[in-house]
Length: 335
Image (cartoon, rainbow, N blue to C red; front, side):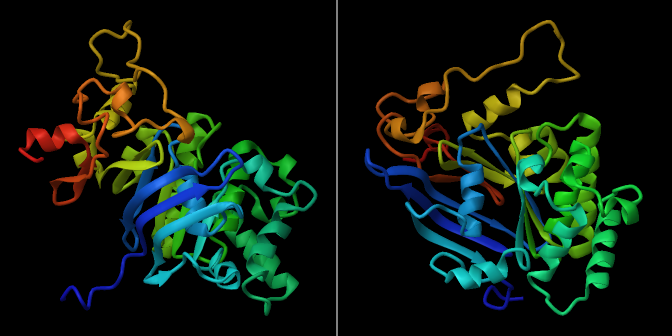
């Protein structure tokens, strides 16, 4: 198959930048973010809070506020989404791409039953189904995501569900129309380890059944290791490392990614009394982003006169692995 005849990626994000207008001036929140997600692929997007993970998903879905200025390109199966009419985006949301919201408790409407909310998500894109058909489909979806006794639970209100059940109900709503792309924004936050495993198992089963692509936003690298095919690491609104999971975890290139991995608890640690590693300093807000590499004030291999002055460019580590770091380029003889 030639390059011209190959199908486009499920999602192709190119040089995505987001700037917010404010009274104090323009605030650049995202800067030149580029990555792809292939059909059926799972990609984990990781980074500290404030790194731009959820903002990236909002830009992809076209859900940014009116004061946002967006540039670059976001293509879903070759269709450009940036600049598309709102009516076009409304038709795509839920049907071709869908997002699992971060907080299940606030994402569900407390005055409507769970079944009614799932039925509404289906009816928006298919008005031909009867009430009985919508109810039957809602029960089927609740059963698919592992809700016990779905035929009776379909009439429950959100407060009658546990935290893990609410999260699974959100997943049911998200996949009700079998979208091509599922964006899961911190789907395991505030859940205990057992329920986290159940939610992740549901996501994998849904993906196997629908052959959908998954963009998993999380701060938990352990979750990424168990679920994702590739990982995208973000810091201060920029993408700093991108590659398949094995390359990023075992041949880590960027010092920020190295710090994130070092902060994970390890069962094979020789001295378990030692405190976990902590990356020094804090991630700067967009208005205080430093010149050059945004990570250089916290980096232990920063090059004076380079990292604090020049913005790093993408450096290829391997066939499916790249990072933005001046030190890597210097080590490999780059400029």
